[in-house]
Amino acid sequence: MSAATARGRLRAAAARSPLLRKVAGKAALYAPASATPGANASAWTVADNSLWPVAERYAGSFPLPEVSYGTVRDFADSVDHMRGLAGASFDMKDLQRCWMVKAILGNVERGGRILEIGAGEPLVAGMLSRLGYEVTVVDDYEGGGNGPREFTRFEAAYPDLRFVRELFPPSVPLGDEFDAVFSISVLEHVPVEHLGGVVEAGHALVRKRSGCSIHAVDHVLAGWGAEEHREKLDRIVDALALSQDELVAKIEQMERDPETYFVSAEAHNRWRGDLSYDRYTMRRIGSVNLFAPA
Image 1 (cartoon, rainbow, N blue to C red):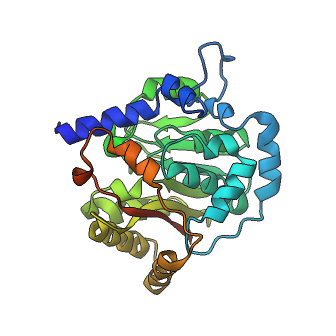
Image 2 (cartoon, rainbow, N blue to C red; image 1 turned 30 degrees about the vertical axis):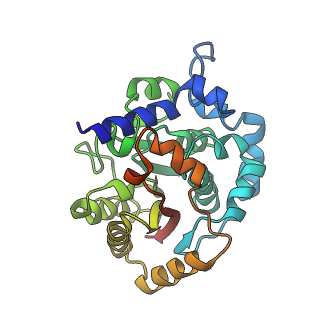
């Protein structure tokens, strides 16, 4: 393991530390030991008495264009209606997790069968399960992309989810009758040579039910890694048979729209950790959101 990878994992672990999160005024990621057995840990970000108003607000009323991007307006709406989830992380996921809850509620009927690729801490999967969806999570929990490794803890904290502990697509059969496949800040970490196959395998799972694929992808518009991120985004769009012209138009719009949500300097500096700024300079990172009906 390189020193940079080790530092990245330490920063990711710190972001999940209950003590550090409490000091930072953020919600706990896990149910405490005293929680009711079988409790779904997502309740610690959006409690039951707040969950059903969320469902009523967005169910069937959050239409999605095929290509869009994260905005400050959408984030502000999430803070107003899902404050705990909108403050559950130190990065882009604060925006993306809430957007994904709205996207699923708005476009997949409650009770539907859905699958999350590379969930990490499955806060969104947990919320959706509490709302009546049948949720499968596929993640190897080996820490890829500075992701978490606490599989045993997650499995205990989310007893109503089905976990498949492998990279996607897994070797075990999943069936081919899903209403939606989704991912949050995952696809940009997949090696470019495997990316098309991963996206296509996910989309194949929703064809029988005329379902959809929904992905929130971190995208570097400017700074180191921008060319690689653009290549990966092109591969994802092609694999979903979406319009490259629409992608180009949306990226151009992102660059000039004052409403575009970008990762803040504060968030960047937290993830920089003990690296010198010259080794981890600021980038302009937004979220490109993709919706592909089968």
